Image 1 (spheres, rainbow, N blue to C red):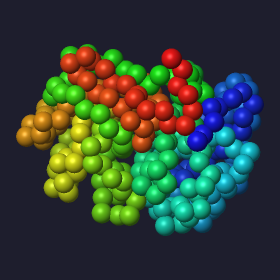
Image 2 (image 1 turned 135 degrees about the vertical axis):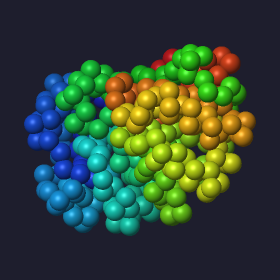
Image 3 (image 1 turned 180 degrees about the vertical axis):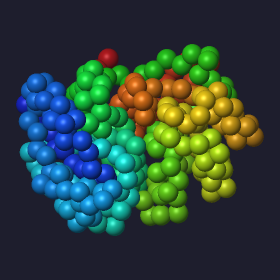
Length: 299
């Protein structure tokens, strides 16, 4: 069970991947403080080691402390980039499982979302990293609403979003396509049987997206899932070409497929709980939460 976020709660800030802009960090922190939240930045977050925000030991220490600290209500990943996957062998999941926390982030943070689901079965939140609040300050409203239990997690799906019609329900799993594929075959890849698979990415050429989806197909992932949900594919060639490529890849499957939903790189990047159960119904044009994951969702 996790408790809803309340004004005055403490938010831990961790840097599990790449270094970040100090200016954007300060701006984002100011936004959260103005909403009445206390902040607990990790001890090592300003470390730089090439393209990493410190060593594995330093980054893991900050994350472990944030999870096990009883004063912390939620954890926000500061930035993606690269490096979260390198932390996974450093995390004592059997111990961390005893300290469930609300955890928010996306992009490279997908590696942590997937591992936490596989190892602890936590519900985590795919949504803006901390520094995104500096560029899109209005997104703080969505983050606060989601973590406070005020969001119904329901989206309308227009006909223009539907690539394949159908109805499916299952736990929502996924995030960044590249990160998801990089965890295939590891102990940190969750069970996707019957899942609604959420995919997004940034800056990948069309042929590389094709190659990643082909990898999912060859690994049997697409044989297991109940539905496919595509978010933003920011700076990944023309959206029409991405949609056409996906349609060609999935045409032999009967599950529903929807595209261009507001998740991932770009704006809006709305918060959605990973590991929670959703219903996707393209005939009714809805994607909605159908399970309670620890705190009450407002009606």
